[in-house]
Image (cartoon, helix red, strand yellow):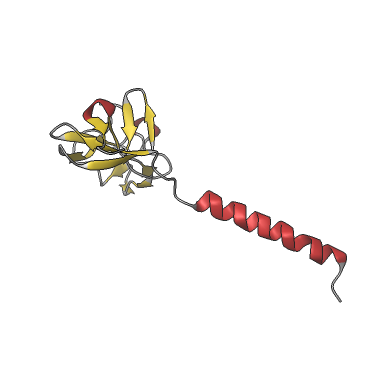
Length: 123
């Protein structure tokens, strides 16, 4: 025979499961932008002192997840491939797996200067 407390716990478990799923869902980009510069560098943090992990070229469409001090975050956070304190994804510049280089707990996101981006046509 079920007790009253077992009936009361079911709704709580459903609420907890729903909240947990919402927290695990990937963040949606706030908007899409178009790169308006040739060779726009993708960096590990919003600073020219941070490592370069690639480039965007004029005309590419990118998601923008957040903005900070003239920079736009254009990716979700992902593994930095840290080994012996260095990121295997950094092509040029600082490759240290440190908070100062935008790498926290082995993850980073890609940043590009906001001045290199423009509103996508039709948005």
